[in-house]
Length: 337
Length: 252
Image (cartoon, rainbow over all chains, first blue to last red; front, side, top):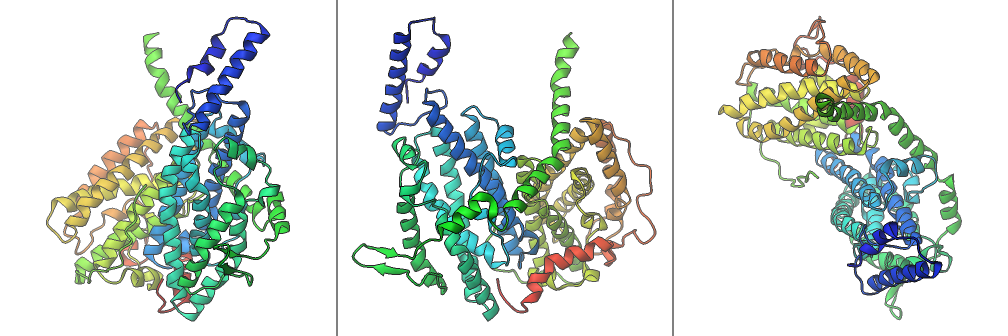
């Protein structure tokens, strides 16, 4: 987008009439709308509607929070990974998630909110993270199931975000998606090893898939006719496809993969529909979805408590780093004085 | 982000006798410290440290895999040995404690490991190749530990106190690294003065007092290298090994 000075003009304006203000506002909106319509990227210096900014902050923050909360269920298995190779892969994956958190908090900072502010909102329950991480990782196979299904669903959601209208978010997502596709493959490969392994390993894999399948489908959010934010986000090209479209796309990808894995998906209604060219699947239990969203999932309390504890335990470390930095930057000034 | 080696091919054990035992000792150091650092995942004081600690852990795990594979099957060695068969230093098995304890452990160990690998890399022994690669990684680990020692020693009263306490608490494990290791092909005692000079300089710059307690104790001198560990170690191994051991013969 090129008409980036529209926003700064606002701060430097001379007192004018209401009519002139309204005309200037309409002009800014027109420039913004035209940029979105032309698939140009909105950049931090560009004027943008307040609601667009607020929507992005909400979405990017929720995404960043999901990355750092999402470290917990997988970190749960780092110390117990059954081979050194699996341990290295899992450590690298959890590290990637911390990195994704960093890119995303940085993208949010371009919209004028600080990481501290956003973390505070997470810790006090004023911003959310993906509900999927409120489910527990009970066995090693859950690590594989998360990679295959949860990261698979995340990729389906996130690939279109690489074309999102907001530049910093879109660029962060390009990097995130590259790493997510590695995560998804490692999950699939870990499950394949289990599925083809001993009877106990196969059973472990099947049990994990049974538990993660439905929550993964819920990751796409409520059905289109109940989705609170969808329509406007689509108009702004923050969102490119509807929840139900993406969910269908994911089911169509996952169903043949399950077969290749030698595992079944826990849905008796799942079958290929020749006429639609898609898989049909059974009804989703939205009561469970809403319950987990409300805070009644198996791990909501545990996840946020652990996050808060890490943050609080780290307060003295962050304060020390800040104090040390202040002393160092203060020194040259003091020497001159 | 550190890439991950996903190759499954395992080289045939290249070493036997005392050199194998020496490689195993260094491999165990790296493995055990990687395991400890892995416990931080999701709990670090700031997001940047999630990345940094994982990075260090991954480097160490990579070193461990090479070293263990020189002497046998890496997974059999990591998951099926009993506590008394591990040859790591007691220093690396010490619990993470608060962030200051983790940093003190990193400072003491990475300074030692950096000097050791530089020495091995300069020689022509069987570990020279590994050491040449690892010395670059460890230089970063050492820098990371030194920078945090400075920040914490110098930062606030609380951080100064915590860092001082941590340095004191782990000091008694810092004599062990310089006990002779058969088959290593280098005299670890020879670089003890350089270690002491370096650590003294960092602690002094950080405004911390160099601990004055003994650097070893009854049972502690060279004990880890002989398979004598602290009580913390058994629990760490139990957690690390239980899944692998629960499925004998399975592949993952």
